[in-house]
Length: 430
Image 1 (cartoon, rainbow, N blue to C red):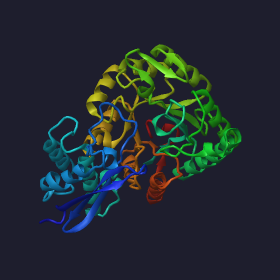
Image 2: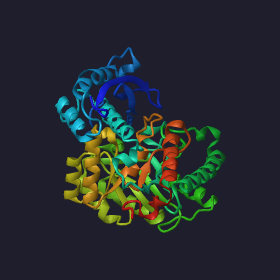
Image 3: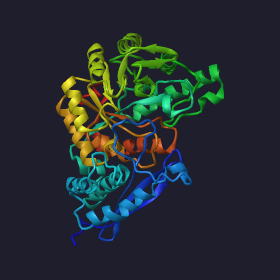
Image 4: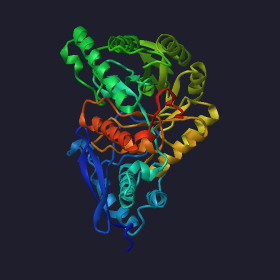
């Protein structure tokens, strides 16, 4: 058997940062462990995401166990890929997709397939004696702007904020390390402001590390962020140090039957909500807005993209890292960036296909974690391999988040003088 062929596949049930079960997969080459990957999981998920296979046994983890997915890795997936060359990523991914045989990976489970797919990539990099980002793309050299979600709401925490993430983007940083410095300094100022108004308990954090405060609506959180950035000594605006971002996750506060969005007790029709976003953008420079409208509203996304030409409009639930959904978006001119979440589609090859399609049509690619992360920092290598220019991986306050940031610091050091920080050109890095 050649030295680059799969000799064994193993899997286990591990825990993510919420204490929920997820899948970890090991790939062996010539009897040696060469690739390991963890599968992240989302709490705020889109209707069109690939299927996460859970056991459904209410007596164990309230039905969220993944032993069946693990069994699928060690059974049919193992049988299908043992003996295949780990460097043939697309071939292996295609075999797994064919083996599942469903449009949403509902047979084997996207968590089982993705775990194998990512571990194969790691094993391929190890056999080539290369870091993963360089193995996937020898021309990868762009360090991303981090989208730091300082204030959490929506399904990420237990408060009354409908909007899921209030974000600052350090576009004026000189490097990734400098970007972390800027956001950490602002976060300490924000902590003091939050404590002064709401007390120490309001500095508890949501799933992705942002403060889970009693704030409401859309204006107050942005005003807090503005004050914190100014107190830290940074300038706000396009061409300056900082711009704002939002992850609205609006499908979760949209009544599909009534056609209304309810935000802070006020109901909005689509056009009225677009007007609200325009008012926000007039006061706070919005660098990026994710899922501002319902996940089926391609026409609304197109209208908002036209109304806010300076703002990146990102499709998350709208596109779910799926080429076919993105194709519809391009036809409608809906949004101008795609959120890249590998577990939404379920294999590395399909996720890269979606990113390539986005690039070909002038869309940005924003690599993102999920709220249910592990210490696996794989997406840090992916964003550099994609030359993506932007990453959303949570505040650097807990291990599953700092792992990603610290990996990017390592990559920045490895690349040395060849590294470019995306900065002001985060949507289309130069």
